[in-house]
Image (cartoon, rainbow, N blue to C red; front, side):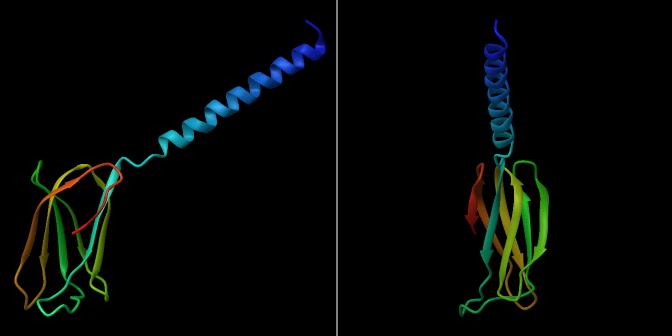
Length: 112
């Protein structure tokens, strides 16, 4: 095999390897989680800042996240494993809200 042919084959091999390794990183970066998000409102439509939002995985009966709503009443619970959930919202002076039957799949961004 000539030196030129050897260099061409080597270059082709290196490019192929680079291509394969480059796509492996992309494949492993795929999301295997989802998130739940929303805005908490009172009965008149006003936002409720500082409400406690508890996210419960109902398949395992485990609280996976507890957080507070922001000044605009919004919350987000990111990076949740796929599964079935309920969201419990509590705030002083308001009735407790329980959202049930929430199924979260891979890469879901569910509004509750």
